[in-house]
Amino acid sequence: MCHQKLLKELSIFRPMLRKMGAIYFVPHLFLYVLIPLLGIGYMLYHQDVESIRGLVFYDFQKFIPFMSIWWVLFGLNDYVEGDSSELLRVYKHSLLPDFWLIFGWYILHVVILFLIFELLLANYWGDFLLIVTQSLAFAGSAFCLLCVTRTLMVPFLGMLLYEIFAMLSNFGALAYVNLFSLQRMRGVSDFIIPYSIVLAVSCILPFLGDFFFQKRK
Image 1 (cartoon, rainbow, N blue to C red):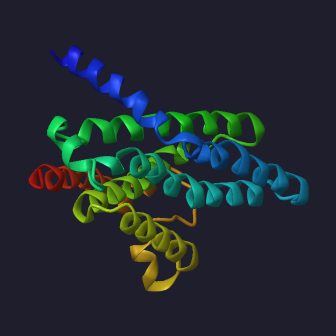
Image 2 (image 1 turned 90 degrees about the vertical axis):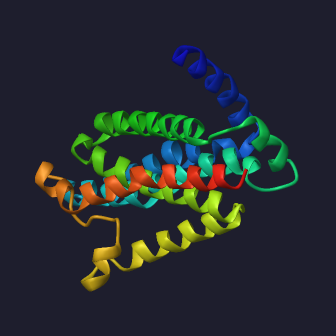
């Protein structure tokens, strides 16, 4: 039964991505073009290897978590907004499987990016859990807002405004509400406080969003 359910979700997953058209490839441009080009630029113009690694780490945080919302919003918006949403909700009891499939698909792309940088510059696997946590926080928040507001614009602008805030305010008291880290993860202790709390809340957000989706059916 579980096997058949998974096959059913996968059969829906591919058309969901294809219906985005050309905008489906926007995350690819950021992950495999912009970030590597910036990394190569740092290597050409900076002599200090540690500074280069720090700049790349900050670019990871600037682009990877934010782009995690792209496929979630543009892939699932038809179920919550527009004239077709009422009909689609009749055949869709939950959006959770779709959310986790999309998020997992995105993280697979992030894994490939980490492999590329392991060859180009350095091993960033120590920071991988941090980046996944930040990505889940963005994607889960966007999904929850999408289901609550039933419009794509609110979660997209909300995440964009937070992205701008996070890039400009990682200091003083504002650092306590900022997901970005100024230092790379040197061990589990660096992650546990405070990112274990962020991870726990981020895991709850998709379930909360799906609750509102089912409530509005």
